[in-house]
Image (cartoon, rainbow, N blue to C red):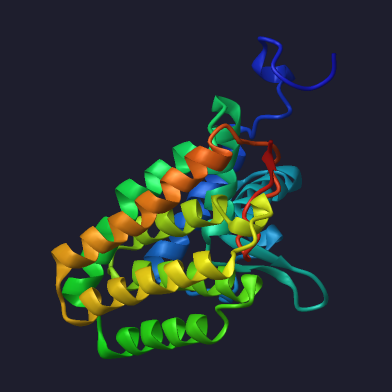
Length: 261
């Protein structure tokens, strides 16, 4: 048997060695200590080898780990090299998806998690939303109103509405979790096509949530988001409750993941 775990650390090429992890931690500390922003150049491969006294393969393994986590982007070409990147929900969502897939999680599990998290985001948004954020939410609802007969437009507007509310909440962790769960339950990943009636109800729900957020009524925003998502939870449990995650095809750009019926 080649590769994998065989009870001997010297025979585990699938695991990063300690030297590579040491380089990973050093690069992450450097980014934090220097306040480096996305696009800022990092030490070259040779510089990292000299600084840490490690082999080329060790540095490349460290860069592979950092790149896979979205911390570093490896640019090619004459002026290429490692630069700071910004981790996003794609990597976060991919790891959560793998965990859920391994545990046999269903769409109903994720829908229930959204019911627990997103009303909190709506409540927080109502207490701290800014005028530009209200304007963005209003524009989103107007967009949904105009595209209510277009299932694809409805799907995009719905996702953006939840994303805007999450950002307005001011809590980066909760907002990221909310976006991740929204991606995992993406309607297109299930082949859902909104009927005109369903889209009309979605529009009404979003209008009520926006109204509460706009007037700064946290409890009402929480209650209206909870009712909105509970309706979605009931629908998914009735129609897709036993659907399980089937692949690791995470796509934070709008498709969600594919599910096994």
